[in-house]
Length: 204
Length: 249
Image (spheres, rainbow over the protein chains, first blue to last red):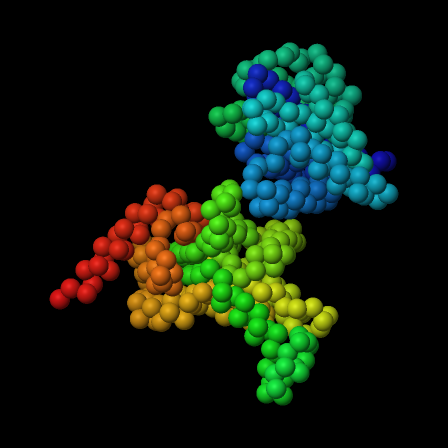
């Protein structure tokens, strides 16, 4: 049993035409026992930047709180918002600081940069980042997630199409994973604003 | 007599004073004035910018006001370099509190943290005290709007209205006479302008020399607003009109 699979979870982030979406399940389990179906894994960092964190639940919470701390200080000192790429770099730095006693998390960053261009990145628990232009996934069912996204993704989707696609990818992947599912939340970020919706999926 | 006991921060003089701390307070009395006023539904902070030369590049943000957190802000009087250290310290403390307790730091606790940090420089280490005084303005759900003044000794006190920096005595006298409880924000702003105009003395008050920050709440959210120069000019004109007719019978 891997520590990264103790609590379970699944996250996808995907780009569309001038928009990004991030979807996460909301299950919190203790191995096979499900304990909560409203556990937050997607965190708003600012109006155009979201972070999704999977892995050990305590580290999911700690990491999001730590990043909030660092972002707040950045905003006060630099008098501007943090760009997604900068945020991603900070996150990799924080994770690598704990190289020999890491946070057991695999975070995902999704946002719009200062020109409203979509930005995605994902990293492993010690901060090795990967930035793609289509989609990134993380969690206990990544093979499922990769398969679904690779099949259903097409570039330049509108916000509504993006919402449909990312939702179906997540739901279908979680259905084949005992440790993920039990509810899902999808957030779509556009230059005009952010829309967050809860999905009705199988509660098993 | 003071000579022998004034060069070390960590020594009392025979008449029970810490001279270094007092000298630090003197340094602040040469700095630009800052005033803070508690209103019925908000706080008004104002400061006089010191503009030693026209060659100075215009600053991109406020010079005397510093945001500590969403619900807390401060005006500085004294050595800016010293202030920067303390403000950074305050910001980190405020974030640490949120990190630990997942709620904003109560105003007095933050003030006390900063003051305890300042106090250390009056008791040990052989380092000089910070040459800064602060006016902290904040709102928390436990005590509402609060205004605190803190000085180099590490002492702090809560005020309804006060001022620090150049000519603060004149400012305080004016506040003593003209301050009333439950002022509106607008009335408090006008009073702050009057105080600054009085303390600026010979120099004429103009909007580019003044900075204003208004703190109010909107439900649970605290809003801090730096007043734009155009609005400051308007208020300066209104105050000038009022004071001009004050002497008339």
